[in-house]
Length: 194
Length: 233
Image (cartoon, rainbow over all chains, first blue to last red; front, side):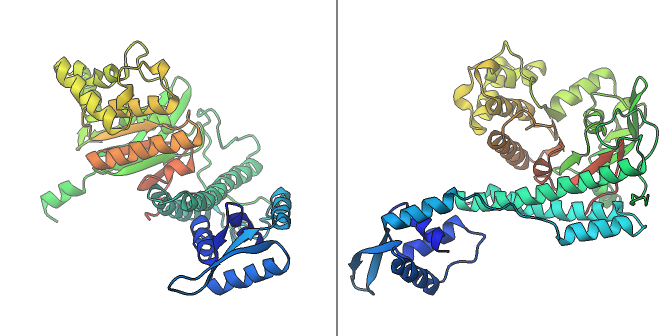
């Protein structure tokens, strides 16, 4: 959380209230920040010398403190942004477990994959409508992120189906083949034990 | 059930057990689909699964070897060549991936073309074309030729041309396939919102899940046959 606040402060000094508002705008799919969380994080960043108080004002309401990045804070932020994130492993998702289990179950996975595709596409449909009405770029980017992951799942499901068909019928390309092949791959697909 | 209710339940456009071959190559083997008035349907499936062939059969561009294509219950194969041409020109609009605009005509002349072919007056056709180009955000490009336009702008002009006759169905074959992500997304938004506004049905062929997600419903083709219908949202 600290580095995210540093990133927001890179745009200029801000009150705790502004930091919370900008965070929630930029990351609409994340849980909204609690004010207590903002101020406790700012206190920690201040203690570490990464932010400093540049102004304290008090109008009619409570005292408001304006925070800014220190040179050390800028350095820590740059270091964080320079560091490549470890790609997700995606190895143990329920979708993968269920698909592989269905393929090995003997009953076949075609029907499961078909229904799962419909469910994924229905979710994409809802998000795509939200995207068209998205009020700001933060919301659009967050929706893009979720849609891209659903799209990746859909393409993986299609590829899985093709791979299994290919294994069961090595001389029968199931995707992109010339449509003059008379054989029919519309039946159930299951992993053939070899 | 009353006769009126039965008529209302009849799909506006339907293909039933359609087979279509090109020489020794079979593209469709028993494909079926129903499209209701104003409905947006995506036809998806792997490359070579027969998506475009089915679209062209629905649009009356191709005649099936066997099976039926009907509009309001009337068989398209029983229409005369002239009737089918007129149907395609007036009741159907077509948007392709690229290369559909006449290069020697301006954007406005391209959009006005279907109306001029219907013997609409030149001034009236031009006014309708200008109105559609304006509506789709390319009104200032009316006098530009296609080569002077970006891919996204060309698609907007093509969409305007498809809609200028107030068609009942717009067919789109990979309409964003030649565009980058953002231009494709915008062209798609224009196509979807314009057809929703006019109440036209939209039949969109795509291999892109993001494009399929703008439709109300998906029909999957595999090896020339339609798969069982997926769940509605």
